[in-house]
Image 1: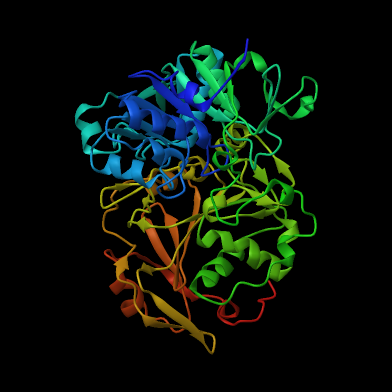
Image 2: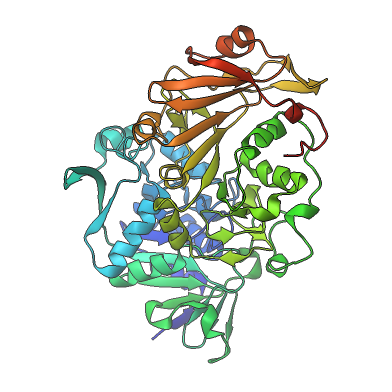
Length: 517
């Protein structure tokens, strides 16, 4: 029978050496009241110690709330995650080798939860081959301590002559997840949540592990009050329910973030957004938008890719596209920053696990993702820089089987200043850091593997466009006003292949007015 307890009591359900799984995506779905209670207990009693924390996304706000509440010395012995996100203190612990750390593609963690729930022994998948997840590279081991001391959590297997990654399941002792409302029987509704995250999968996996399921909710309502269609976690999967103080159950960690009452605001549309100013980010987005076709189902990554939706709206073909997020949100206006993954005026909200399945199956027509580092073979790193660990998040899940992949970013980084003049791109101050590297620090996307599978991969920057070929990156287009040797080759650590007929990028991209595409 479900019991209703305080956050203080919930924190005392966690013992030394337990595996604790949590839900959350920044503030969305994050049981911050339970995190706070565990933080307070550890500060008072120095226990529990040596926990294994399992989470899919970053659950923090940049150093105060969420997952970073668990960063005290000795509290965590191991972190298994796809992304540190804004969990900066946890990322620092991992980078400093103060704990074991594994970075696993988001879909693999979701798969492990589902495998536990269904009684299977593990997950086998081709997602992540030849990337940081592959045992021939990092095997998802994220720091030196894990490389030296950590056990293997993934291995390479062969089935019918094909290569796969195999992740054995492991039991979950306790989970902290978040819902919106509970009824007196313990049924959990997610009706006010910005997205339907991994709450059900975590609860089912923990229950089947004979672990303890603790759910934080905003309020408890009488039996029969909840709409059964909005109940996503049935009472028999729940052991304990906690109602924290309201400040520990906010929808968004952003100062002026997502609010449930805006989720169905029909007056706000992509078409109502003001045009993005003409800068190097918009140049990239415009060139990427020229690859779109009517009816495309498209995912937009964070950063520069987010602008593609605004460009499509400005050009008048936004309504012909379907924007899909790996969080499960379909359509609407995608939000960013601490609200990334949510949207205003969404058309549909799928479970995150179901959306990841669609991505794995090649259900996306096109995917635009940010570019941090890339080498001559088209290998991309967005997960580890100068020893600082970010993790792949859903990047690998989105990128590997999408029909067309656009990798986007400015050509260099760090104090880069540019402007357009008379239809030409002018570089006022070159960036301090090169992105086109001889060798990337970590492989989040394998260009070699993509080329071998004939995946259509385009690399778009504000001054040049490249295509991935079987022999590596090939320069195919150059912005008007740009000198190839001075502004492109000299700013790379390798010399790319050169197309036989290098074209000039469409001149309309570099004027303030709409392009008319």
